[in-house]
Image 1 (cartoon, rainbow, N blue to C red):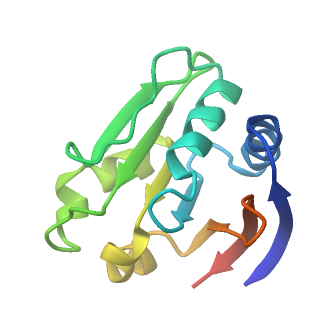
Image 2 (cartoon, rainbow, N blue to C red; image 1 turned 120 degrees about the vertical axis):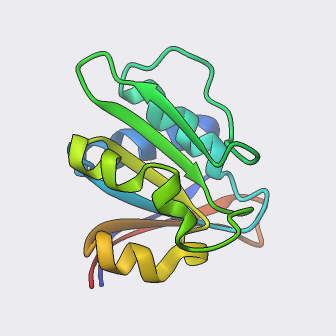
Length: 148
């Protein structure tokens, strides 16, 4: 696991800058595992990332649908998974993981630990963004690259 960046997010502008930096590292077919406690800013980050890719639709958390797809104007899709309510790791296949990987879509997966075995098998190379609340009232972002 290699650390790519670590920074404090004091504002929405900082989150937008982080999203731009991450987008440059997330090619077609790229997978970003997004971790952090409830309220850590995961959905806010995905909204900023979508804007970087030119998506103008409203981006919401797929908490109950488990997956939302957003066409990227330049091609492909941004697929946002929220596995918090996933009943079993195999359910990720039912949500279209294999098709999204084959299509070269960019995937953002919240709560990846709910399907870790499937992700280790299907996505051996990925980025992981960990968002945490620090003691100053700001968020801390740490981006790593993983190879299983």
